[in-house]
Image 1 (spheres, rainbow, N blue to C red):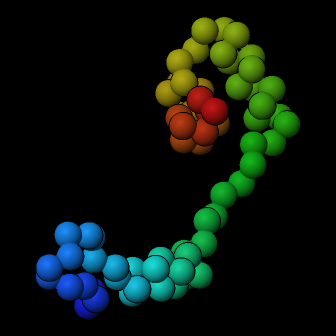
Image 2: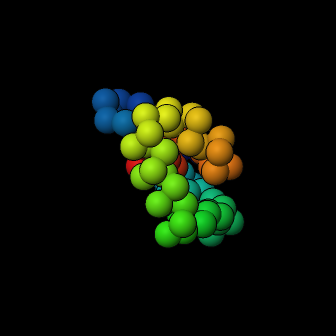
Length: 70
């Protein structure tokens, strides 16, 4: 990656290729996710009400703990 900058200038170098790399990566990388179903939401509500941990609920539903905590 080549950055265009002058050595006597104290500013950060401008790298045009960084911006284009970010755009190319966003075109390639696609997010694959599914929403929680209404049934899963009811189960989470009930299990939270029964004082179960986030990890327990996530394991029971086969979801990530971060999904449950949101």
